Length: 576
Image (tube, rainbow, N blue to C red; front, side, top):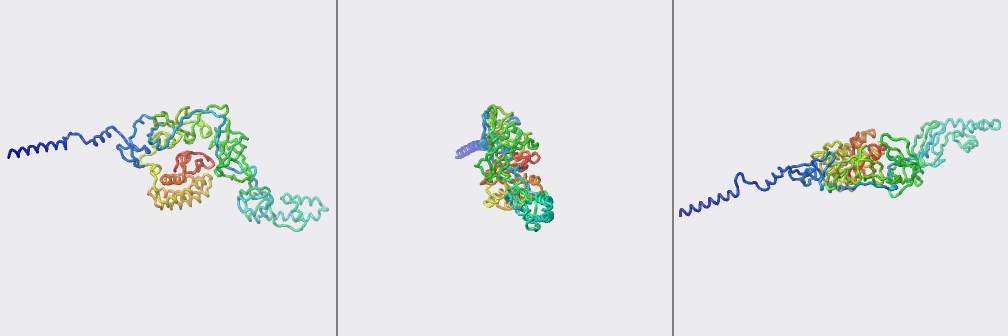
């Protein structure tokens, strides 16, 4: 019995040792498979990145700290690329909507040149109504600018001591006209020089009484564009009273680039369209090409005359002109789509895809000619058959900046963002309260009106809109929003308030730089926007540092330079 118990104990010990070996293994045994795989990843140097934020690099899988998307394996095949080249993942290309086209040469008998400009007063038909004698304005019959007047309409009544004395001379000479007809005639002619009519002179002579106040009549028909005097003012002979413009005919003034001058000549037909009447076309002919070049903008004024008897066209309206120009000899010309070009002042760049099978894009500087029918003529930098980015160009350029490669705004190739920088611009859309969205809509409308006032260089209107904007932005900051949205709204309120304290249009434009950046950040965060906004960029603003702004229209109307460089800039992004 005792031996039997010892046998059982021995068997139990052997089984225990065997189980212990199987469960715990030896000190130098294998690790779990998951640990082994992790070490293999570390040993292979595999990095993980975000398809939308390639500046994020982590040694293991996870979520992007900026947008929350799952990280993907980073492709190491980009090693050995030049500073002009960038590699994007197929996923990033698809998400950004990047599209390419193969460019080539073509020839047409006729091309179309598009110009941007404004309606202006026809200076050949405006007139200034002046005082014909010294005196004091007793009554002014013109109440406001924009009032229509007819030829012969009474504009003002003037008391003139000179006329009183001249009338007394007339009455005296009238009694002597039979004996001294020359004196009588001289006195009448003196009154005629002061624009008194024969009927007025005859009336004075017949009544035998002196009139103290005399009316001033309009000598042309038109619209009052400026009132230069007020009741009670003393005027001298020749002093302007009102300025009258005839709007039956107006000018269309366009800016043409230096490279386009050979395409224009007098009597050339053109079509003009307006934002106010998008479905209506106005015919015109080129009447004048300015012989002087604007050195600041390198443009020349091209002028056409428009018939405006219906009164549809108002001075100051933005217009677009289209001119058909002959392509002499139908020469072969390499062209590139307008959307493929990024402008940086004097530099023009495009992104080329050297190999259609690889997602590699190369920055290329190009020399361009005229814009014709949605495409630029290419003088140098590209060859026929090359594949260029035609859609999503700015996205590719932004990716190049993030990776420290050469880009439109970063020609030296330095890293522009790291970590969480730019979070506000590329972060996820936030659900703001309905009240916050409504307040932002009103604030946005105010901002867009202020932008237009800067385009028009209207300093006083900018100040008025800034005062209203400060109140709206302060209200927005108090609404139910995330902390970042409230921070941007507070900055917007501060920018508006600062703008109200500026006394010149140049100072207001400097503040507009910061204001626009904060408005763009809020717009990017706002979910459910009912407007499509264009983020536009002028590379020459802020001392060539570049500055952005928001616009509802794709057409460039530069708020940082106004008429000086009205069309300088490009669309760099959209907010939907």
